[in-house]
Image (cartoon, rainbow, N blue to C red; front, side, top):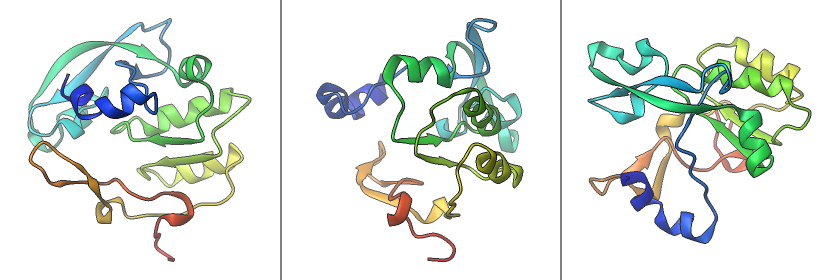
Amino acid sequence: EDIRKRLIHHLDTGALRLEEKAVWTSSSAEPNVTLYVNEEDSEWSSVIQSCGERFDTQAQEVEVASTTLEELFQCHGIPWYLKLDTEGADGVILRQLSKLDKKPPYLSFELNSLSYLGEALDLGYDSFKVVGQGAHKAEHLLDKHGRPLTHAGDFGEAAVGIAG
């Protein structure tokens, strides 16, 4: 509910669509999946238990509906930019792109494994920029305490990467 309130303008204008589902391997085989909602920091919540409970924190188990990238793309179209930030499941989701004929022109993901770069290359992505996400702040997007959101900001050519 909080996210809907925070993003109401974008939802009302149609600039953003919110699916209250977890992207996972198969929604037909697993129509629901357990989401480990971290009680200390909601950004650590994950369908991967060890990620949802990282640093010896507690997480509440919540059953949520699941979906796949293919289902989302069929419903909403192929996005121009796809940001994967699924707290430990980025590789699982990245591999779903290999089954799709059309892919988003721009893709970002957390580099939890160098193999992800090879997988992205195999998918047809041939230009990469490694960006330290902790340095980004979206001054116009505030958290519930009025602080700029971190790990958000420019992407593509506008993002400042390791080599500039």
